Length: 417
Image (cartoon, rainbow, N blue to C red; front, side, top):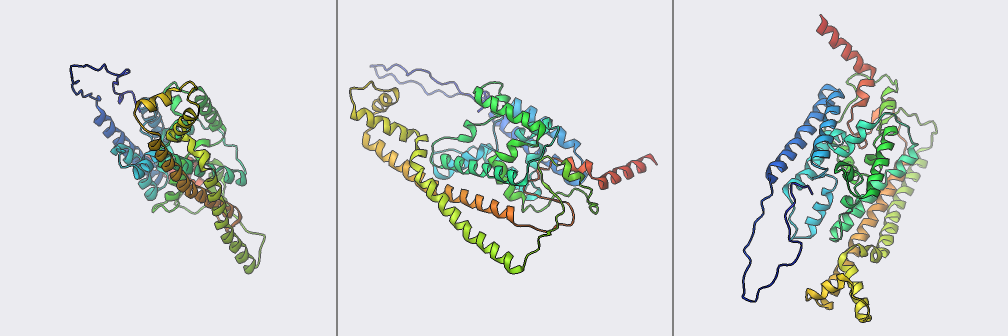
């Protein structure tokens, strides 16, 4: 995870001695591991608290920019993007099904603390504490807006990504969030060229539109949006009355400021009730379709698991013993495992994929259904409002609001006097 945490490992098997010689047990010291883990947690809480203070108490963007710079420098380039709250989703899922897996406390806290802050104050973690979001925020210059329907369609992707990440983690197959992380290679100044190029494309896109990764890819952001939408304290652009100048709406890089809306297409009450009932009936249908599709695909998806792949290779070798033996198959026989044991392991993995795949498919159908309902439901608004599930507390709207500018001017006059 970090070169400070790397252990020295034996590259080759030890020689065996006929005399019965036993190798002494060796312990390896990981330099300052506890110190760095503790510092990571302190920095996480301190930076989220700083953004909370700036967004709720001062309504100013300056401390948020400073936080973003610190986060990119410390959590990004110095700590090389790890421990990562986004990837911690997989660790939590694996710990739920595997009693032998040791969940580090620092990983658990990196998963829980941003959620707790989101439930209390909204997505302050996304504002500038997450190095991925902070890097995009610092590069953002212009905001070219996409249509509501396009944004809604793209916002389904993080939920699908989250469902697949949980599926592969729960089946002990792989951590796809870490495997396909587009920014980790940038922070580590090396890695898979394709992923680095993809991360570079996202950063170029973030210059012209707000946070493309956060809005349309990040699975942890999708999770935080649930808690942010019901947060106890909610961010306000200004304490004064909105004058509907639309400056806050134009400044928001993530389209989290909803404009006033007057529903001119009036309809009878019965028509609205019937339309909602159609959605209610259609939602379970989408969930059933999603569950069936994922269940039928579970056999193909299970090839991500090494036991399933190994079982197929061993079967081929058993059927054609004259073929050249692959290294994986040779290692299987060298371990003394039997084909029956491997088959049992394969069957267990296949069963897990059918179960968790069905649940994941139902959740994907639920998300798609709710997004369609959200597109169709219209609510009258008399002034600009923040959509708290999408607001990332970046603070851009604060300085654009003329009501806040009036407050700033008054403060300066008082200081002058």
